[in-house]
Image (cartoon, rainbow, N blue to C red; front, top):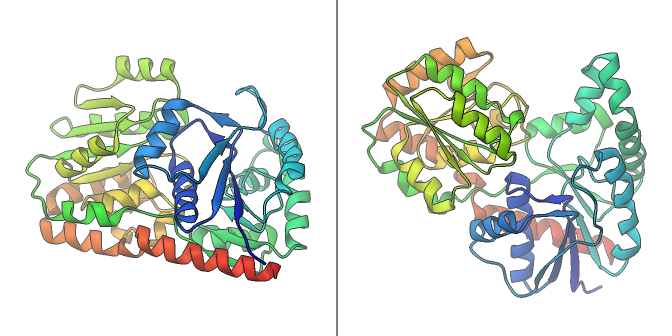
Length: 366
């Protein structure tokens, strides 16, 4: 069987986050290898799409972005998860289908990529009220995952942490790890640049769920250190609130370009990740390490695969202690050693592993 047309389904392209960047990179790689690729989404914003194109350095001609349904942005995820099943009829025109966000998309595909299992974690570990609220979404996922387990789909996860959760919550047996791509080829030379200023950077969506206030609290403990928070503005009202409440030693930069992010990496010694959520991988943390920054992040999630234990905290008190240590011990030698840790997540390695998986999925269909 020959495969010419591939569909990659990604629920939301209205933000330029890690999942979106990985999906766009995946689409580009497949298109560059001769496939006609349609990236199918439900939510789309032009500024986010342009940012994603810049992040992957342009898209080939045989990559299309399709938006088949006009759902209101405020649509509950349970409703959207149900409506997404309407895609199945359209997807019959493709020889290979990749569900790029199996966490929230109940679409049986040839390849299904899970980035985290937060819905299941919150359902099992949350309060009774939380469980009642999540029950409709969890039940849709339950049916989807049971169907998925009975299919010949290739199940992918993004870290050993997510792999363990796949086994814990749904007893997936046939699971492969495909680490997201990190542009280490572009960033690794930054690790040898001297840094004189005590500067700490955080790259994050500027929205209430990303723990920006935690950065403010820690910044107050280090009045002589410069803190920079930069990223995509998802909530303009919240960003205005941050501008009026930030400490004097914190600078906010909205909607930055990739070039501006590189300039921040050149000057900072430390990368601070205080998001309250457990991340399945943590692309921004890996990027910062590639550029030679010392990462300070929660002792949970995919970062355990690559962040040294001495830089992982369990609470903000411990984060403060690690911050003091990191600012003192940064050196070019330390910077280069951290950069070397994440070389295995390079774009070239991602390309090779992705094509191996796609070829294996195609072989299953022969």
